Length: 630
Image 1 (cartoon, rainbow, N blue to C red):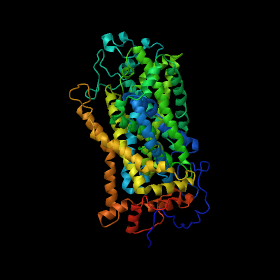
Image 2: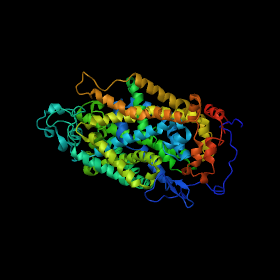
Image 3: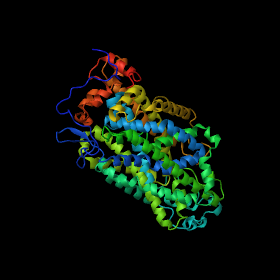
Image 4: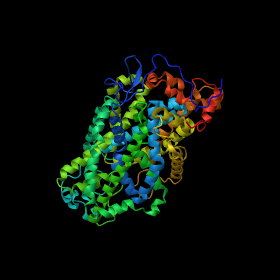
């Protein structure tokens, strides 16, 4: 048996009568699954066909709803505010160019080529990395939980045209002295004391992880309602979710531009904009600013979470995902910058009103967007209308992202347990109910600190670990040459040679930048618990955060060990090589790849032969960068 170069063109695989002369699929002839079925269904010949988007528009809108979501309007401004405005903006743009955009395209293309969710895609391509898909699913689950809580928090504090009518210093609680409330805007007071109810009545004592208080009944009802809407959106899988995206991906842009226009016209707005675009060089040189920029990039674009692999897996094989990813990533960046300009123009106005510096206007944290934007609505005609539109915008942004996150979790279980494919409504209902129950502690009076822990650890540190591992597995083990060969199987020459920039970003810059940020972050890590500060979170809060990280990240070595143990071979080295070898038998046997439609292209592109001994498998693993660059 001759030794094969994995990148050499394969000999043609004989076509069976059922596979000959069959054109590749497109959006117009996709097989529409019956109601209640997800992941796969059957065509007229009994072959399983993976569910696909009804139209390209639905795919684009779904990606926009996932990526252009609360991370842009809610998280980006407050992370920028906490890290010095312009001092954060420059690292964010750099990380976005070196890591974000290349990873976005890579994940969508990887899912589209393999037509599989974030777990099964690794079982086919690099079984050793199967745990990465499990870890990504867990992270999606964690983020979906606190996204549901955020949507439940969206009760409008802009209930009156004049902010003094809402909560003046003398009307918050008569037992408080005006000096205790100096520097707090009416919207801040309302959000803290009425929406979150996080202070003991008549005092400045806050509820916390050590004293979480009772459940906020109003927020609990909002939480239940938000998960009910998610359930109804996911009952019929990607088909029903795609329809919802027409609303969740378009309305926010209209409201956001209106708020930007109003914010820019307010007195002293220019001071806030200066704070946003002019870097503070002392903060620019701190690793925490760069770490925050990387974490925000992951949160905003949704890279590293497996959700993009899932969305791409529903695309037809020949879809031009390169152009799609370029459009969406640019739109995502533009939305973040627009939200930032809108937010900081309002912060500049508030700074002048409260007679404080921009950096001291409000407390940093997830509640920032719920304070500054509502303040802008009080300066508009018909403030009630704009307040409602603003919170509907936030709600739809969260809904679009949440649908994508929970869908990733459901795809994992439906791929793992095929009988759930015919019980879509039941699976969506159980998933939504579990998320609701776990979210109850977040809507207690001290639940904001718990929300901050999930935000810092589940959406930050965990994703850094997984993104590095994902880049290494795809570009170093699966191989960058092989990956580009896959792209050309799907796209032909539409992407050209991908350019040295994209190849360098995938192989060197992206993993290098992320690895550097991760190492320095771990070395400079300081617990949030401060024994000398009674108001800091308790020591077990940091332990909970690292437990969240461990729950996802430890799946990688656990499942890698399982893959090695189950692999063929007589020595450990042979088993490791085997676990890094694509499971091409699974590729052939899994009908959801629609082999009858693609004429074996995917098998040939993954590996040029359907057999091979251990020496050939070693050559395959060692040749990730070798072979022809066709």
